[in-house]
Image 1: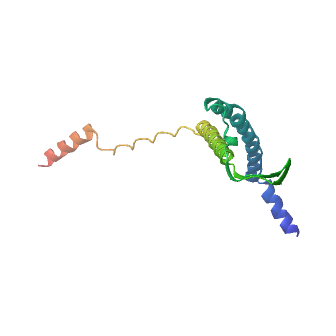
Image 2: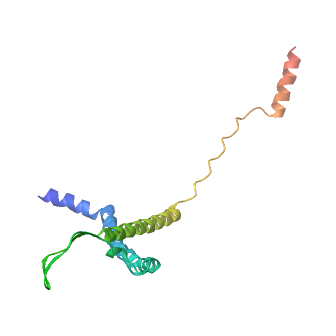
Image 3: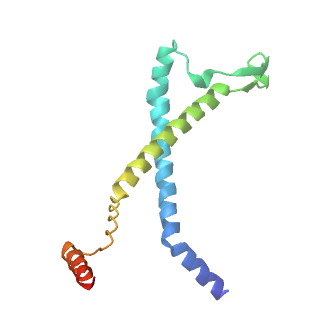
Length: 141
């Protein structure tokens, strides 16, 4: 049992686990901000552009509610596809925001890659060495 606890402690204290936990908490808070942006700012603007309609009210009624006076005998059965559409819209905006944040972070992290040095030209004989060689060849003839 002691070895199990030791292994768990090593796992839980690793930097990756702590970083991931912080990311999940910040992601949850960020999700709330973006959801508020969509539902409180963007969707009312879209509703105003579409004549006051909101996506969340769009639904397909499969079965009407059965009423007995003021009492609901059977509740309405419907597919609230407008709410689903708004959740998709939330997701797209959240994904776009996360993409932009990660892209910015990667841009800050990225160090300019050093340009590869041109390979040194093979060292050949100098002009003086060539002239000396020619002179020696002419002497030997």
